[in-house]
Image (tube, rainbow, N blue to C red; front, top):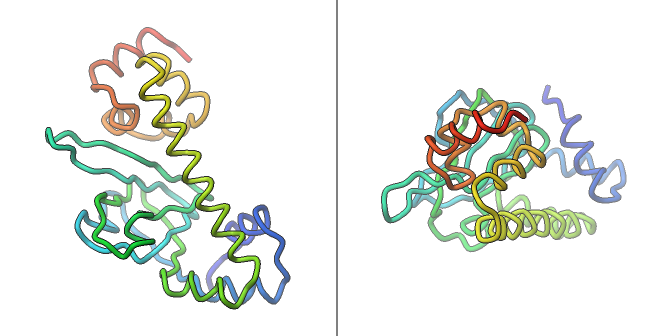
Length: 193
């Protein structure tokens, strides 16, 4: 039997939903377990699945034109994650989704997600909130890259999401805040947070 407690709490925190409607929504989510370093989605493949992280961590990354590994998003417990551009447009993904820690995930297909919007009135509100959160997260990250230096980006990351610094390897942390591993090591030695 699948445990939906975390997902139920997440949904209820974001929208008002009747018990019967919630049961319908949950019936469309399936559970999977994935091991560390497994790839959920490869660059160039279509992303027609949205994940909810019950346990573990997912990383969204791409390789830039200079061959650098760039981490765009990291999802920990109680967060949704999908390669939105591909999920929405059905075009090939520009990013890869990698499992960073052994993970327990719930997932829903694009078609089922859309179907829920036709049968559960508040599911459209859920989708809008999901999109808004993704937009705000991306906008804040973009602004931090243009307005903050490396030290400020590291301090901000530690303040906003200390799990990234505490749980992930330096290579991923450095990639996420767009600095070299060497710079990150110097910052960590200089700033004892």
